[in-house]
Length: 232
Ligand code: SF4
Image (cartoon, rainbow, N blue to C red):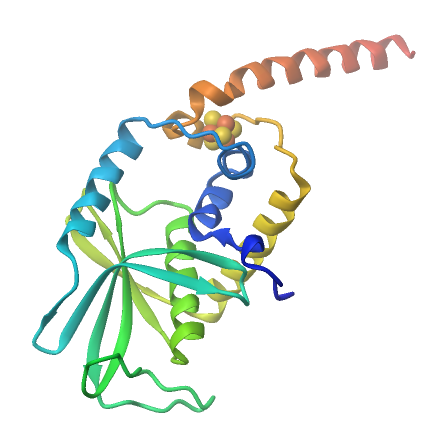
């Protein structure tokens, strides 16, 4: 991936999740600056605020860092991690020359980063949440010079964690998504709406009005059919 040259060219990690959910949603939020809260985003925000209030603390061999600022110049993304657990380890070296443990300021030993992202609801059929988490892991790798192989998504509805392995497939999807977001945002064009099953739960439904686009497209198609039938 081409390395962005300036801080201004970094995009929010959350944009990757928005892009996979719907490119139009991504453009409305990150190009046009539109934001609208529905009950889903509101409950998600409350959950994040609870995480944010916890602050940093150390429990035995785990150091918890909340609201940790992240950046990856390789992906061209920046953001804030809900929580990164640092597990104390005997630093293990991998075949590619990386290690799993980092040195933390003011702490003795090696600490393996383990990102945890909090989500309302349950696991989804798409991979947007996993891509967001993987982008966080790739930021940690670049910032700390370590290899991050696993993290977790905590779903409020299930009240438990789901482990996420950062394998080659997920990493490639994350890189491709970051590239897609950069292309979309630098085009400064918002894609037209197209009704999908995700629209019902979209916080921008009232602003976006995909049913109007669908109706307009139906009219266009009807006109095309009439013109074709008339041989014009
Ligand atoms: S309402 Fe549908 S088309 Fe519009 S931004 Fe949301 S998901 Fe995308």
